Image 1 (spheres, one colour):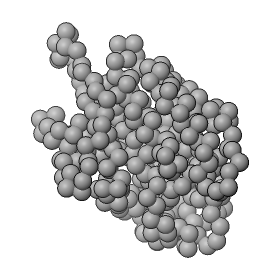
Image 2 (spheres, rainbow, N blue to C red; image 1 turned 30 degrees about the vertical axis):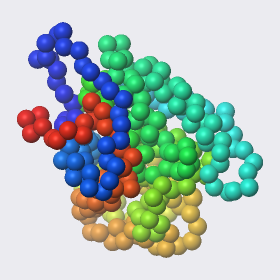
Image 3 (tube, rainbow, N blue to C red; image 1 turned 120 degrees about the vertical axis):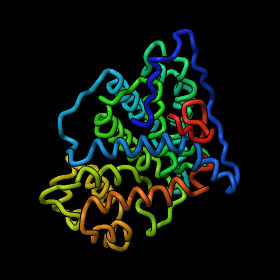
Image 4 (cartoon, helix red, strand yellow; image 1 turned 120 degrees about the horizontal axis):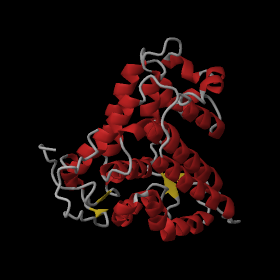
Length: 319
């Protein structure tokens, strides 16, 4: 895995120095720094390694669930419980319920202790740095919106846990199939409960209002599938029968629940994708699209934060 670092040869008395991540991309001209950074290489390496590990596997397949994975699920369960404890308030505007800010302030206060509870005792010094990515992953409290930049922060959160050794290669399937799907569930509940706006949505020209990664990893699950072809995912019967096995179909099910009217109109990009002949072509195309439409777009990346684990420094070719 590109994102894990073996420190076994390091001198035992070396202390890792962590730092609070901060914004580094302040102008469009800074985007070059991001694309050449160690953070970009590590992040993309992480996404691609998970894309590879889920290839051809169902959500319901067997995989190891370690103690750290279990603790991450408990963390997400806490966030979910807080939604129940923070009902929407009556307000004139239909979207962006202000109760979200109350929910977010709870996370803002508790994030470090939540992350500390997940980390091994000898890695707790990393909690303040890693907690920033957790806070960034749930949406924006000022705008009460959520989008692919927030989703990327959650992937960065998991990547950081790998970089410090809290998660390992044996956790890769569980990271996607258990942790990321649980995160998706919490984000959907947030979106529905507080009527969050899509952040930087391209409307019908975007892949989805809120997510991107589950479509990448979800299409990888389908690679070499013997019966389910891309054209099948717009069939409601197929979606209902197989959504528990495949992330891609679970995303389509959520879209169908949230949107009305013909699928071709409200989700035009996905409709177009259904005509692509193979899942491997879709998977490769979505990875290219993710780079172009999310990772290389200034409005998304200007909010990304850089610390010691995901560094703005130029990529080290010797890593």
